Image (cartoon, rainbow, N blue to C red; front, side, top):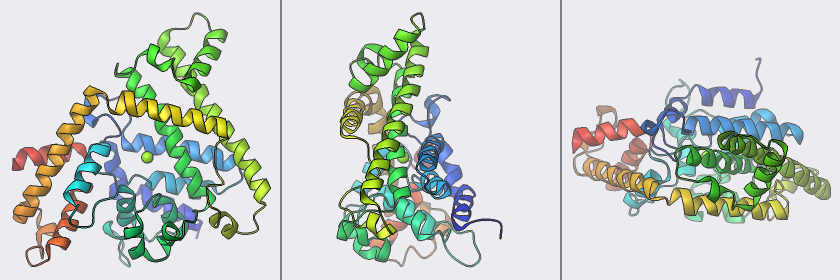
Length: 349
Ligand code: MG
């Protein structure tokens, strides 16, 4: 009665079990490595905050973008991308594992809380935003929500925004976390074009500032800079297109929410800098290897002896096909927090 459809979506997401588990899931650093690092939960909050700012500036639906941002990572496995890659490997003979698709599975099927339906019964617009990417093989089975991946069309503007806000958020906070962890040095950071600009600007204004504050202040500027660029450029693109309906946005070959050419390049440079220097850093790589092993061990163990699974998952599994069993196990593992996966691994192996 008091809420819009999108407000109801957002509230159901916040009240879901999968949302609460995000607090104990890795973004880049495993949850127990330190209390100050981002987790999937704080990452999702930062994405939401950035996306809402942009939505407001562009007169888009702030609540819709918030709902998408808060739910975009609900299907993420424990241990970040390492966990997802390992689970995809385990599932290679059973249809694979994609975390975006898993997020949709969580809100469409796996949350079991409501009397009248499985999942959260969210609107099409929120679900469309959650399914950021999808292989055409899986898209075929998804009905109208998967069609755009086959027809190569775009999602609504709020979904496009949430996608970009995700990248803005992790580019910014992974630098912050990587620097705090001592894995990225000041010298390295000052070689990235977009960062170099912000660092110089800050240094010019505050010449006696400490290195830590210099970096924080520059990162702050970096976020403002890319948000501003995105708002201005998207506004221009919307004006050029002059859409009459949502279909005009959806039928485009590419996003209407987009950075300017120059910023897009700088943003990409920053992304590849992080890939090379942080995500593939030996210290992160070591965690990655351990995490992959843990996920693979768990999957193998459950497949071999499904009586080790809790009864609510185990019941009926004995008689079901390997295909169904594997999917159930993937759902179970994907739902785990880092610490639960570690404890399960210790218990079973
Ligand atoms: Mg994300």
